[in-house]
Image (cartoon, rainbow, N blue to C red; front, side, top):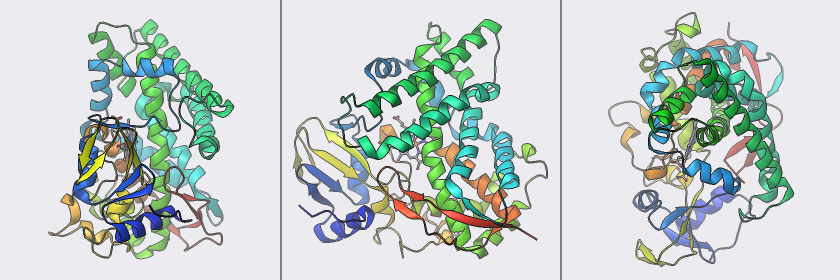
Length: 414
Ligand code: HEM
């Protein structure tokens, strides 16, 4: 067993270099590294390797409702987030990204994460709820703020502990789901059909022979929060790398010229033209994967990589570890978007897992990467980040990997 250190990311990297691909970080808590073993853990999710409920477990009533999001409705949510569905919303996403660039306060230090978070939340809300998004955004913002404020306080409490802070989050989750139910009822009463994720889930629910209600409201409330938490952090890192690499920002700006003057006219045919921007985003997610540590609990005696595991043991796998492992990426600590270009590009590297793998793989990967590509293109297209801010950011690894307190100065591109 190894002692703890202040920086958990370098602690993981150093521990793995020292003890190998499976090692105990605490009694009965094992770090699993290496691309094959990590993929095996992801693959075995739900088969003796269970997902922990985590810090923000839903209260039992909602957990049951969510589990009942039956066949067609659950599939509708997954289908509605596939690349083809995301592509249909490119115009809306581009318009939001352009508004972020237009409204960005220039020639002054700006706290990057809150600024970015507003846009990412809007993108997620409009994606899920179309014209009804404004009716829901306030409840979602309240929940998001509460989750950030309270994360560190009760991250390590078991999910059944009804601490006052957890009860506040539950109440807030219920309020958001309640608002979504009101929107559902309103749409049903008006016979209104929209082109969004909620409409797809409602239709699927009716195909299942059920009146849309509680079940999909809770599923969508969870999605709405997921749609802004990780992408906000990832976009924070993206902005930081744009500031650190002005020559790459210039190249991204040159590529952005291919986008239509009216951002709302951007469609999926424009995206393949943003090749360098795409490489830049992929490299950002490699160097700074927000979901850097993922846990599984063992529910039946088993074996992994020659190690015996018993019920109650916990496993930690880490996209960060893989992405910083020189067995899989040359000069892994360097930011080199070019590794995603050219014939030998890292596209099929099995160690690239910012969105996980297996049955629990991220449903929002296409949405998140499209948002990031469009934000990079719009921001670099219109502005230059003038180097580093005076206040350095703090690496926060307690929940997701976050450039906490990142502040940057933007100037209009001549
Ligand atoms: C850069 C942004 C994002 C990153 C890095 C990220 C990362 C991840 C990872 C690593 C997992 C797997 C967790 C595990 O195996 O336990 C996951 C799951 C998930 N993500 Fe994301 N995610 C991002 C954006 C999004 C967005 C935009 C949405 C929704 C629109 C979303 C919805 C989900 C959902 C629903 C799951 C759970 C899937 C399931 O339980 O079947 N994510 N995400």
